[in-house]
Length: 384
Image 1 (cartoon, rainbow, N blue to C red):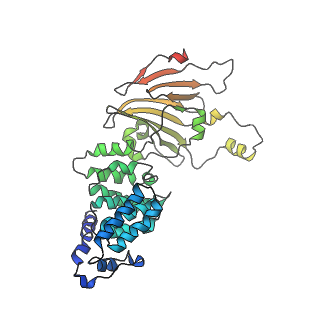
Image 2: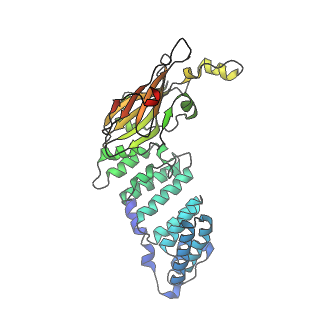
Image 3: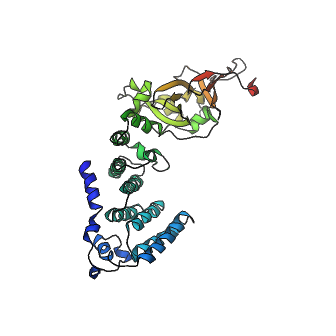
């Protein structure tokens, strides 16, 4: 990685060394604005004052008036008046916002060649562009390139590493098989970073924030299939995962579900788990699919997912843990879970076939205290 890093720093100053007197000046044209030789010829002339004024108008159009599409011609007009690293970098942002991924990469190439600083910001935009090109296939060549630029951005001192964990910025990057180890390795190489804490940051940062109150019951489980798998790279934070052996017949997979609360003392999350068998489909399910006229089995008997509420300290050590929802095997009643904004929560067993002969059990009430421990609590007044 180091030679590539040095190469990028070297190429960033290419044009600074190639400037010549104005006798070589040739105005830049729209069709040649990404051609290195044409840009070099345009560097020794042009109208810097008019270009800066046009660039300011373009940035205003983009960031204040929120007119991304309208800002692109203004950015290009500023570059034609006088090409600058800032002009190309700002143009790349507008192009990425409109999903013009390939052209955005061309603009970033020019910003890099012209010496845009900080260069780490160029790297993160490369990462974003290639992650968009990868789409839902983060393990292809574009996904690999996105991972490489993520590492470069971190090695060059990108100031907000957690951005790479935000799903609104990089919705599929973390699904890459290489993401967890690459992110952790890159952070570990930064001065003053604790490798174990880097792994914890990577794990904790991928839980999606959800509004409270949150209720995980049968309806919620049916409408929220588990899809966002937790890499085995993070088995240190999930004790059950350490002993799992994923064989040909299947195994238990773990999934990000929700970030409940992040405070100075603890981080509370919910993760899900379910046994998965890729090679088999049960005869009962196959029959039900083939004949939709037959009455469906009780929905609760098909729920095999489990959900755990866990609190960790700021280094990723478990403070408390409780399985709060779902069912463990066909013989166990379904658990339902609800948590309030004040971190009071309840866990309740729901019988498979509620009727007058089998009363629904009363919930168990808890709260998450200031240290992150689960403490038994009295029923709220409304439930008494």
